[in-house]
Length: 129
Image (cartoon, rainbow, N blue to C red):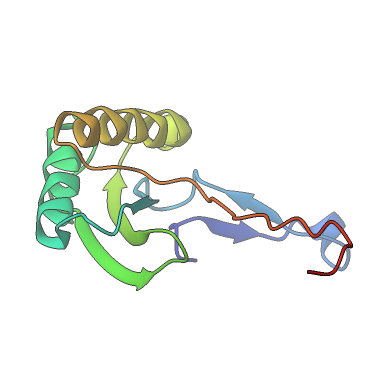
């Protein structure tokens, strides 16, 4: 699978369900964080900051090395993805949370905005002009 999990199908549940485990033959776990930034952001700067954030975390592996991409344009944001590997299977959610906190702090320090969806509402009062 994409996150390096393995599926085991126990004999007694062979035809009814499967089981996902992160304790298989390989202890590496794949992590991904997706973040949207304001349209006024510089894409190269965002990518570099994401890579720096991943590299400074003690549980993120350097081999395979972290990668950052700019995969698409969102409705109200430029969307980036940070992918990295860890060998700390039991703390996968904690590592992702740490990375998210570091992203938020680092982006604030560098004046990179993280937009939230906004909508314009037009109210029609039913009278003709």
